[in-house]
Length: 191
Length: 106
Image (cartoon, rainbow over all chains, first blue to last red; front, side):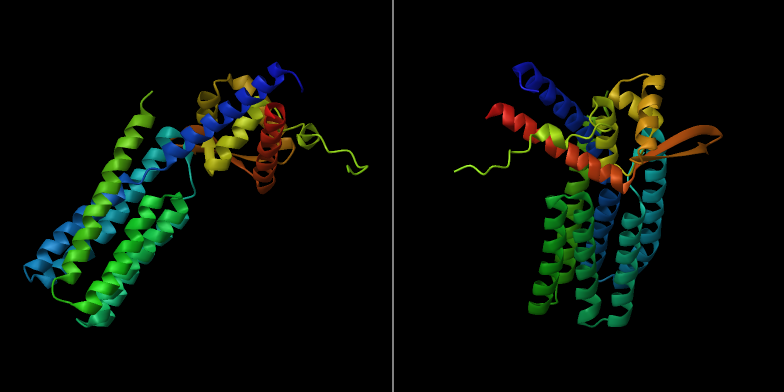
């Protein structure tokens, strides 16, 4: 393996393998649905909170949480069957359930106190950091870190509109991440 | 001053089983995804059923991949996944390949 032809052959093999890996990675890095769904839900929740409809917001999350997780699970099962390549779903499912349970628990235990505002934002932020690690995506990590940090800092300064503001930030950021990923998935899925 | 021990050539690090374009491609895809179907691998690597089966047998016999057969909506489906040994072999193989290319380029 010393001639220039050998080197070209090695480069060709490396290029072919890396392209096959890249395509598989892009196909399975599909997270537009949960981001769009929960991003939109967070924006509606923030609007409800701004109008003082706290109970409506709690009901919204209680209903939307399980529906969103069910829809996401069904979407991934269908997609896996359709494209024939997948990651193990359990780390994602456990993180999603952890976020839902964590938000509900801190909201319930806080009973209108600081914990019920800071807790869910920190739980969402940490959950997104786990998703970012699973996906190796910096953008998702930034959304997670900012949601948790803004949640803690804004709420410690002023509780007034801080919760709905940070919730709106998370919703908008998750929507952007989801829509952007949706475009990428459409592009790579096109033959 | 050079030591008396000759430098190890990167080709010595190539794995006879994995160092083949299709087999390396199978391990490459399975190092990104946890599992892939026989059909996905066939289309992604642009090989025939027989060719892919033959390469999968070699990898399976070497303990680099595991094959699970099942049914989805009454249709047979073969899932393939890399073993821990398969993932490690793929990483070592790609490292050796890159070292060889770098050696040519230098």
